[in-house]
Image (cartoon, rainbow, N blue to C red; front, side, top):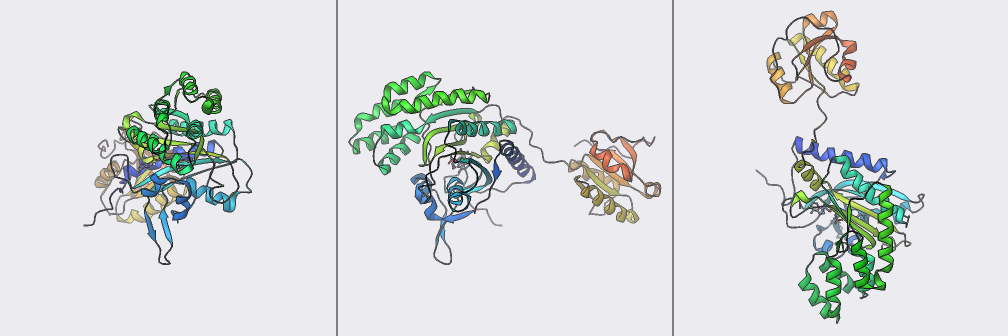
Amino acid sequence: MFERPRGTRDFNPSQAASHRFVERAFRRTAEAFGCREVLTPTFENVELFKAKSGPGILDEMFTFKDKGGRDLALRPEFTASIIRFYNSELRSEPKPLKVFTLGNCFRYEEPQMGRYREFWQWNCEIIGAPSLESDSDVIALADAGLKQVGLKKTELRIGHIGMLRKFLAFPPHDQASVLHLLDKKRFADLKTALARLGAEQLFDIVSSVAQLKGGPEVLDKAQSLLGQAAKEAVEYLRMLGGQLALYGIKDFVYDLGVVRGLDYYTGMVFEIDSPNLGAEKQVGGGGAYTLTNVLGGEATSSTGFAIGIDRVVLSAGQEGVRMAPRPLDAYVIPIGQPMRAKAFEIVMHLRMAGLCADVDLMGRGPSKNLDYANSVKARTSVLIGEKEAAKGVVALRDMESGKQTEVSVQDLVAALKGGGEPKAHKTGKKPTRRATKP
Ligand code: HAM
């Protein structure tokens, strides 16, 4: 017996169905917002992430050397890859470029519920539209995706990293380490770090700002604490609130402690929590940033976010969202050996018509086959015996009610696509065996 690597998971059919259900909702929402899908490599040159993801990410990366001695890393996120792709090939696309991707990422973290070494993200970026409208479109997209999944109990927190960056005007490396401590809410270490930079007097102000959370009144407080450094950001956040109202988004809080763990953010930042998840409750986050220039291109404003699919699945489960897989529309049961060929013809006819259909592969009798159909939650069973074949019909059995009707082979697809009870004349006979309910 082999064990899987720490922090990774296997997904059984029902877990995989939940995962794909959430992915489908995200893909549909992204497309509804005019985003197009892109795909980038699972591993990249390590330098790409060193450029601007920040020390947090670097410590958490899975890095390795290939046989040519090149330093590579499994992607810990998508943003750097998408911006690399933009710089090299997508620059001349019409602006704004709205793209999304869905896939697995890897971070060498201490695994726990909701925190894995391999996890999945839905990532969206709007590149080349430096506006309030694109920031609000991105927030609305994240919000709509979670609503499409069926989540109701999420908390959207919006802040602005620009005001702290302006206020903490240290060299980039020092500023990044101070912001990291703020992000992790490690206030004691923050005090020490500020003292080391000769700016201990800033501690009270910065730690107070980082704890401001609430309605528009917290913007006034930030302004009075940070003065001129907060002016632009505060005005921006007020306007953003007005813009989000156009999308029907009113239920959010300003949280000036949203700092984000990645170093590239420059303006509006946001996070979304699912309070029913415990310690790892952040389901998504993002904000405005400029990364194109850091990765060797022209400075282009961008805004985006990523949502953790694994955490959304956990949260949707907690909220009782049904994430059922696509059901098997029909399970075809030949009655007796001579009918097997006909059964395969019928099952292929159904499959090619876009239905989910399966057929007995075990040579079982009708009763065992009905049990199997029940256990795989087939909507119907299609029984085909010699008598039926002679008349060009099948017996279509609704597995929920046990009701059985005769349907001509030509009408079978329409009867199954009609859903619910098969619409055909009754046989007049009682079903031979009532299926046990799943
Ligand atoms: P992030 O906050 O690092 O942002 O990750 C986004 C989401 O991915 C988190 O909120 C969380 O739900 C999920 N996530 C992160 N790490 C793990 C893990 N170890 N296990 C399970 N889920 C995890 C980014 O990645 C940015 N690239 C977002 C972005 C896009 N900003 C601008 N554009």
